[in-house]
Image (cartoon, rainbow, N blue to C red; front, side, top):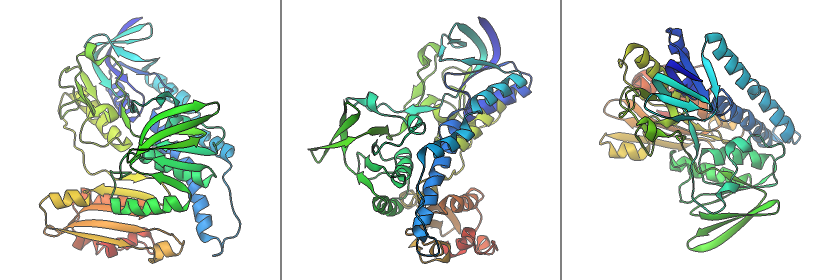
Length: 448
């Protein structure tokens, strides 16, 4: 089949669906394509189902912390029941998403999309021509170039495990490895994380990461730093992971090996035929999210080479900007304000704004407030083993420019600080705010 559209959208996640719906609402003809179940990564294979699983680890941790302090008994994670719960959130998404597109009058296509020219997309037996094309194909596990790489399970596959393996090795020390390691260890697995440098979770404050590493080790996670993984071999139903540390070979026997070394833009779509330039971060775009080499093409989300981090709120914001520029011409420039980021370990690790190093290099007159606060009421009443914060202040302008947290409350606390940074709320005014007490927000005044 050959058909023409005002816009063809590649990808059904946040980066693609928002623009598709807005263009359709503006009266455009719209086609949307995905080679995976419709609905995108976050809702099916990422943020949402991950948090369902991680919540079980939080409950286990809470009970263990309070054992003998008013709570008795030892709860355990029933893996199959937990997976069944997760599927209640994800199972209906593909059909519901496609049905919504149908109701809106958006044509849906399943399969891998490829450029055939600057305006033509091939998907299966269909050749589609678009006045505009939006690339929103998301990210995939990055290629590592090691022997036996094919044996690495993805995070998607981990979240579909019917049974939890007894031994798991995570290759790489990023979000995926630490979040799933904290869950797996609390569910009874023997867990190892192999990271090639001395600094795992390098996007986060390393003073707080050190506390997280201590807690990780306390719950049985074995974190091996400065390990360069060389190969993975399969021996029957088990695997042997071989790595080097200080030129000395080491091996780990395991039942499962998970890719946790980061993700890369998913751009195996024949960009050359579409005259679409890219760099390491993704499609090269201008300030309007438009390809610098093919004006018919826009990109959003994890595949766009921008200053925005690869997070769902950023993908959504970029998709909205693309929609505005498609419908009204290039009138809206992309703005990437501070976006908080959270590692959903137990405890959680969160960050927003400048790091301490960035602040020191900025030339600003800064003050760094760093404190371990397990003795504060917020954390003491639930017997948290690790809780700490680091807040970075621009002294001259009386503003918060960076905030970093480790605790069970870190995810909500970082949002409050994100508002303060985003809207440049003076510290003097923040101190006058009366928050509900006792809550984690009521601690803000003491941190600034």
